[in-house]
Image (cartoon, rainbow, N blue to C red; front, side, top):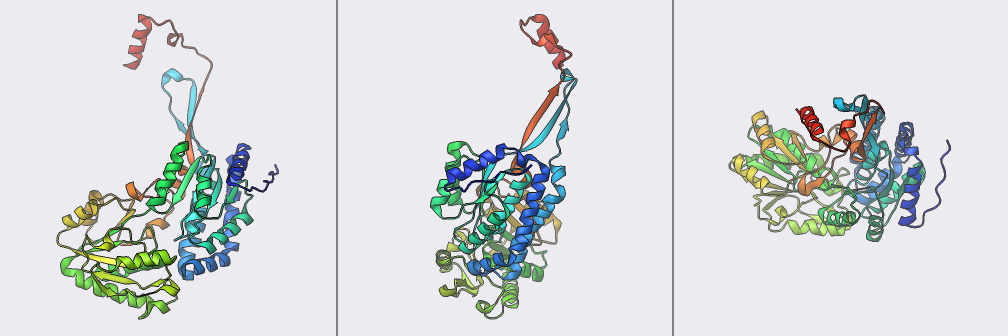
Length: 466
């Protein structure tokens, strides 16, 4: 059956109405249709790869390796996983019936929500915009995409990709700043997916509350990284430095601070400093493998966190013309220092010493739940104990960031670090709902359930319950 062509939408109201009208036609409910659209998205990403990489370089100074690994390959992996498993995800699940409803059948069917809004983030513009779209398409929805204006070249590249791949009545892009976001939030979406910070998240929730629209919030937080005495310190230092300074620290999953046994703090600092030099050379500003800060505002914000926060071991220098802040390692940091009062979201790594592990865990638990908790320990009793005694969106032992690359691991926060899960099947389920189906035969009939009620019927009900 040929698809109708969407008229050009000149406002958010017309755009969303057009998508609601298209959804009602039922095309997106067909699994084969969804599979073809996922293949269209995959093909578009591959065809637009050079344009996307150039945009990421301009906006964030992303090294090609980091951009391909964390942006493009991530999305392709999600698509391939959905293509492989979508038919099994959409199969109805049969459930049993009480004998009073025999003969009959019951099942649970995953159904699309309708028209969803996806508001992407600037730190991983491609991954955090197109990644959720994979789940929305797999679940059978129409979608409006709002890329972040903080990464303008990436926003333009994403918009071009979407317009090439999809009719806007199915998947559309709305570019712009705060006014565009506000206009979209006033429209009747069936779900809102937002990635970003808590301040804007509260605004999104306030708009959603007016229409009782369900929301998914993918936020962040101060992710702790705990080194136990049993850890392999040389390997831990290199992995922590890699995870922290990947994308210049602008990752919601990046370790925000490191907790080290006091008598091994100097050892860790020396190893971390050595790793920074190995990775980025003696002058990181000349390294092609170190990204840049998104804009002047965030650079100034980061620079305000350094004074009064422990001692600079390495880094601390900046070049505003390049939006560059060196990989910075801070020692002798206290919990009351400025760098510990907010999520850093940049290339600054505070190191805090602890005397007893119980005290370190207590400090972590005194703060809002983080998106991730990292543990380096070869003693499994330690890592299991930290897992039991802390709360976080994910727990990763002896590595960093990589938990997000496993499609079958649901991704998301808890408490202040977010609500809702996606990636793989979790994304499909996020953008769908469980619809209950019940079929019964017209016969036999059970007259006992009809009025008038008497003692005999009440007695029958009691026997039935027992």
